[in-house]
Image (cartoon, rainbow, N blue to C red; front, side, top):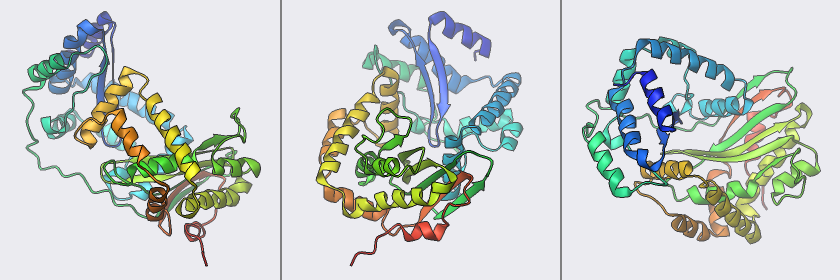
Length: 376
């Protein structure tokens, strides 16, 4: 039942850090505190989540903050492109909507809407409390029982999330005044629990990423990066593999000049389809080693470890140790990569989003035709 000012003062006096963020499937509230302040941090998080005052003045102030955030996000082409990619790939479903939502929703949200949302979604079966660092497990269990024990076991509202249905489609926003084109091309990927999730991570590492301003230049292991560099096709590219509860997106995000878009698409698709047929044992082994190193580097802080534990509990229902994850990666063979690539890429529909001077970007059918090779 704290006011916003009381909450800020309490956090500052502890020398702590309190924040929250939302992804497409999860909302995270987290606190960084000293060891002796763990009980206080759990109590504050419990108070925020269960007894929020939702002051009308604070709601209006936050509404303005979110609208300003929305303006800033729309200036970042990578964010805009990936939002548009989701909106076309998962059109008509919840996953196709942006995290911030349309401005009209932000302007019209009421205290009652927030209270209904909390009542519907903030229940024990949807919560995970995770911690890392200077924390005792038994103490955390006792604190959770003490402060979150009163949560409703299940929602009284029969809420069923919309199924995410992938639709092969594209969305093109032409601005000839822009200096370069931004294009995201994706195929339907796999969920977190799919047998294809780890091979897709290896495939993403094989495709890699590249930027022409990078010190590495053309001395990178990715064949796609070599093609982009040798032929001076793109400013940069980045492969991505996004997993969700029941689906995913696997693809490449390219930034290229307007007169190189056809070449950029040709080399991108050629390297993606190549994973179905000609990927080598050496490439797979190198990618597996690189993937393991990347995963370890992502756990370089207690905040990241706590977040990883929470995500795994929500997606897998248990914590997977680094040793188990590495064992799963080590078990992947070249044939597994080819099998996964054939399922995800070979002669499959794609989704595409593009913004900028895209008058030379090939149409949907041209790209669709190059999602497979003629092999005689």
